[in-house]
Length: 319
Ligand code: CDV
Image 1 (cartoon, helix red, strand yellow):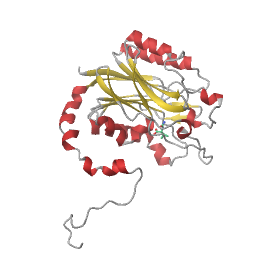
Image 2 (image 1 turned 45 degrees about the vertical axis):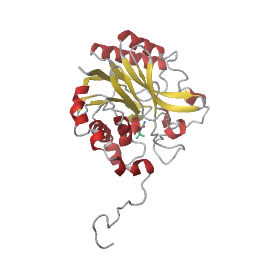
Image 3 (image 1 turned 90 degrees about the horizontal axis):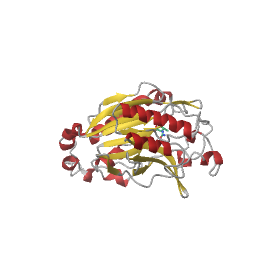
Image 4 (image 1 turned 135 degrees about the vertical axis):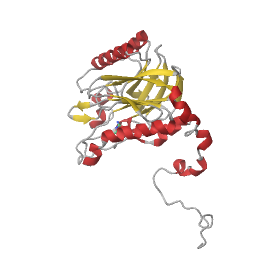
């Protein structure tokens, strides 16, 4: 096989009272199962070590808030995960809250089976708000607790594969995948926490699972790469979050999907040969892309004025 057997380690709810040690023990159990199923690489969720804390309002410096971040990676509580992965010969993707000097990032790392950190990604698209809105049923305050990622979307040659990362809300933006697609990415690992029922329209909540698969299948297909996505899900502190962790082939098909809202390991043989036809033909980027027609993508942030060609250029004789 030209590629890697990939596991996605979906995690059920983590409550506020759960310690890092308990959570890491659940993760090492998932690694053991991954080994038994032949995986060489495992994807864990976004902010995998704690409950999803952006649902609460804190001030910078509150001890309870500060305790959700990691100063070092690995640290004393996460060392057993690195040790177990090394003993089993498995690499992994891990999402966590990173303290980096005065900055705070929603971060993911790629760890090789040796325990070496091959690469880091810091979340670019931070959803939600910086200030609480009491009219909502629940808060999502990522803009309050994290700085915008400053590393772009790097792709790393590791474990025999060109691997990229993104985190949760990033998966909804086509630019995320394309920037990695333009580096020839073969596998994108991502983790997510997607709450529902925070005050969004009922239809948006009802379609949360559909939009989860829709965006990731599109990203995989358009860029002819594997996508391996791990949810943290279930009901955390009374707040429900979707599951539906999945592995998607470069043809856009879901090849494995979690069936529960609990800790669950899914796996697939991610053979890069499956991407070859799409990468050399229909999505041969070098041959078919037309960047000169895409300028608003980098020149604009939000929607602006209409952009219309000259009527003479269009052959319309009323100019
Ligand atoms: N953790 C996230 O980024 N969650 C968002 C929610 C707020 C919609 C998501 O895109 O899933």
